[in-house]
Amino acid sequence: METEQMIIYLTRLETVLDDLGKLLFKAHLKVPLTLDREQSQELLRQNNRFEFRYQQLRNQKKKLLKQLLKLTSGDIYLRQKIGQLNELNQQSQAALVAAPEYNRQRKINRLRQLILNLQGEKIETSIVLCDQVLAYLYETEKTAFIAHYRPNVAPVAVPFLSRDFKMAMMMLNYMDIMFTPVEL
Image (tube, rainbow, N blue to C red; front, side, top):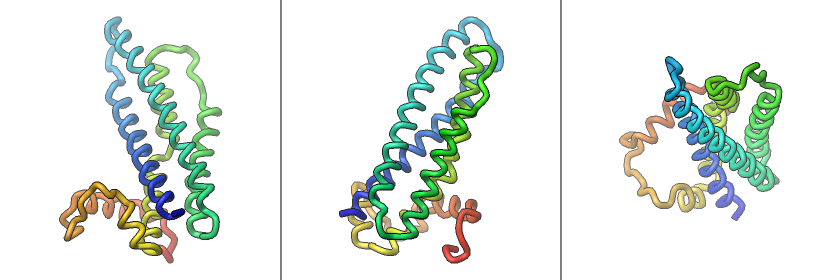
């Protein structure tokens, strides 16, 4: 039961991290090249939506990490990786508090501050840590993992034909500095 809950929480955490990455991408796209009155009013509405969505995603991430920390009781590897995820979250919260505020509360400065906050979340590193924990759970308890990891998605006969598998392998190859020599 504990493994199933952990898989569910980790997949939810991965979707939250993906949403944070998408929000960062959208925020970069919305930085205007020039500021006229019409763009400024539109930017204000978008800033409010972006900030609200960011707060929602941060709260979900914090809640999921608390639940994952409760579930990691016996396994040293799981405690270490979930602890690293929690440490990244605490570092991003500390950076959020210590982040320099712009002198003027202009709309463009609020968007820039949001982009800085999103970059401080260390989204890619967190996704790699989630993938490492999921891979470990797959190795230790294969039947529970297969039953509860993405149950609505049909399994692929040859993983190398799956685009998701190729993207995950490319990301793990790119982020190999996150692995210890034993894990590699």
